[in-house]
Length: 165
Picture 1 (cartoon, one colour):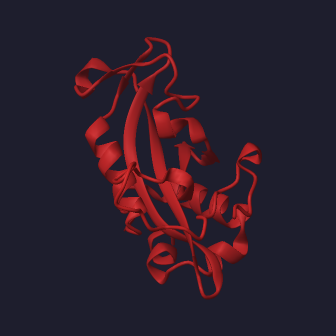
Picture 2: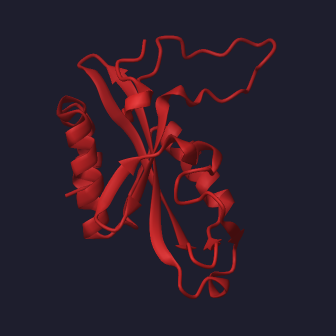
């Protein structure tokens, strides 16, 4: 059961069914518990388009894995946030950050797609990997998580709270 409406930009909560049967569809990832957050400077916002590399900042960008090809790139962070439930209710279970640079004017961007995919996987495995974020980015993410649902933040791990302080 979802407790937030995705159309309003909230985080989704995993349904009660998390097992995968051995038949058709085995190995298919369930992304219902994952939300994508874009951090642009000191602002963080949910942009579910990032699940398919089509967030508002990624649209229309030609990507490269060579940073030198994007000399005027602006730094952005994509944070994969996975939610779950425990005995106290919903909480932020995984959070991992991925770096990218985008030059909107030149329509060029730098990112390592494999890193973005691996970090999404790590978030789904309930890992916290936010050490690369700067203080400004951590503050923006913390504010978004608390503003979205303070009870979920309070119910989250001490590791997440430490990572964002």
